[in-house]
Image 1 (cartoon, rainbow, N blue to C red):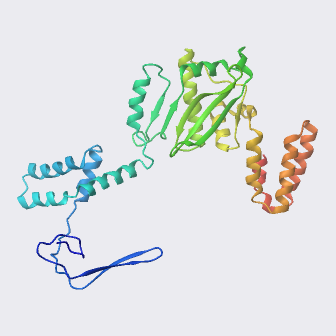
Image 2 (cartoon, helix red, strand yellow):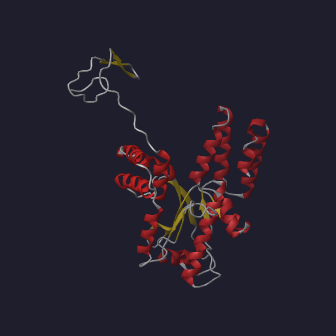
Image 3 (tube, rainbow, N blue to C red):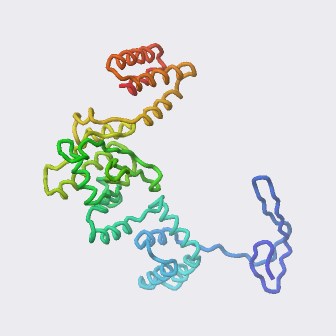
Length: 337
C-alpha cells in the first residue's frame, strides 16, 4: 500500500494521515491531517561541491559516469566502507546530477552557444574558403578580446576591393551600408557591412561579425579584421577598404569605430539615411512636451528637405534657437552637433 502523506510504499501498513489540497487563485496548498504511521525516510546527502567540480572538469560526462567516478575516487583513495557508502548515497539521484549539469551549462553559456562546434565547422569550411569563418574568439579563453565570430569570403573581399573610391570599377561610387542586427544570433549583435550591387540588383553582404555588443571596440575590431582579409586576398600589405563612403544609423559607436580605424577624415564620408534620422528624431521628441515635440519634428523635417546651403543654415539657426530657449531642451545640443 502507499502512504497518502509521502507517497512512499509501506508493506502491510496503511497510513492514517489524510492529505488535503486547497486551491487558490495563484497558489496551491497541500497539507496533512492525522498521525503518520509510515516509516520516516532519511533525506539523501548530496556532495554538491564534488559533483560541481567533476562537471566543470568533464562537461560532457554523463550522470551514470559521474556516479562511477565518485565511487572509484573513494576506492582509489582507500577510504573506509563508510565513506564509500556515503559517496554511493550522495550520487544516487541521477536526475539531480542531470539538473546540476544543465544549470552549470546555463551559467557558463546563458544563450547556449558552442564555440567548439564553430571551430569544428571552421576547419571544415577552410578546405573551401579560409575566410568563410575568418576568426573566432571566446573571451573565457582569451580575455584580452571580446567574444566574436567574423565571417566573409574571398569573393566578397574582391567585391570590397572593387569598391575602391580611387579605382575605375563600377562599384567605386557605391556606399557601404553598415548596421547591427539584433535578432539573428541570440545573445549577440550581428554587425553587417553590405553594398547594393547594381549589376546583380540586390544588396550583397560583404562581411558579418557576431559580437557581444554594438560598441566602439567591436566596430573597430570589425573593420580591422576586414582590412586584414583584404590584405591577404589582394596580396598587398597596403590594401584597405576604401569605399565612396559609409551609410549607417545614428549610433555613436559606428561613427567612433570607423574614425578609430580610418581616422577623422572618414567622418565627412559617413552618412545616415532618412529612416534612421526620423527614427532617432522621434525618440528625442518623446522627451519633450507635446507642443515642443511637434515644433522639433517640423524643424527636423525642414532641415531634412533643404536643397541649398542657405536654406540649411537658416533652418539650422532656428533649430539652435529652439533648443536654447528652454533648459530642458539642452540634451538636443549634442544630438544636433
